[in-house]
Image (cartoon, rainbow over all chains, first blue to last red; front, side, top):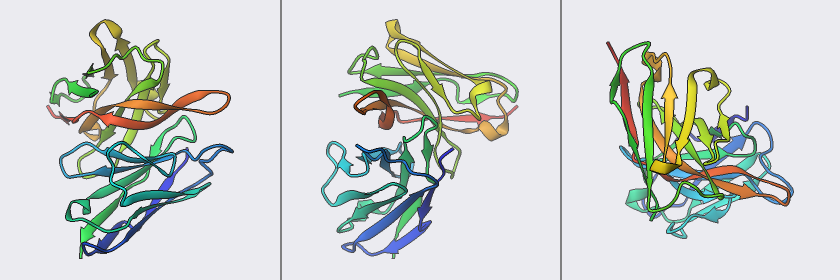
Length: 111
Length: 127
C-alpha cells in the first residue's frame, strides 16, 4: 500500500496570502508519461471536490489560483492568493497503484 | 451534467448487512471511459477508498475490506451498489459514491481520480 503523508496537518494563513500544501508518497506514483496524483477540497458537510489530477491539471471550473506540481514522491498544491472560501480541508490521492489511497488531509485555517 | 445520488438506510444494527445504491443521472453508467467507486469517511476522519466497478462487472477492491464488501452494477437502472456484511460501530461513516475516471498510458487504461462525487449518506451502526 502506498502511504500518502500530508503536511502540515494545519496551516494558518491570512486571506490574500499564498498557501503551499505538501503530499509525500511512500513510493513513486509517477510513470514515464504521467504523475498519478490528485488533489481534492472538502468543505464542512460536503463531498470532496476534485481540484487537480495528473499532479498539475486543473479540473473543470477550478480557479487558476489553484495549481499543482511535483513528481515521483513529492507533490505540492499551491493556492496563490487565498480567498475566504479556501479555508477548508484538502486531501491528496494517488492512483499509481490499484489500491487507491488518500492522505490524511491538511486543514487550512484563518490566522 | 452528471450527478450521483446515494440511497439506503441511515441506521443499521451491529452484525447486519448494509446495502447502499448509487443512482447516476445525466449520463450513462455504460461508458467505457469510467469506473464507478465507493469511498467512506468516518466522522471527523479522512477518506478511505472501498472499491470500484466497471459497467461490464470488473471490480477493484481495497484488500483490507474485500472480505466484507461486494460491489455490483445494474445497467438497466443506471445504478451501482455496495453491500457490506457484518457491520460494526467502526463502520459508521459517510459513504460516498463517485465516478472513477480512467487514465490511459500508451498500453492500458486504469482508474485514476474521482469526479464527480455524490453528496454522501451517513450510516450509523447501533442496536
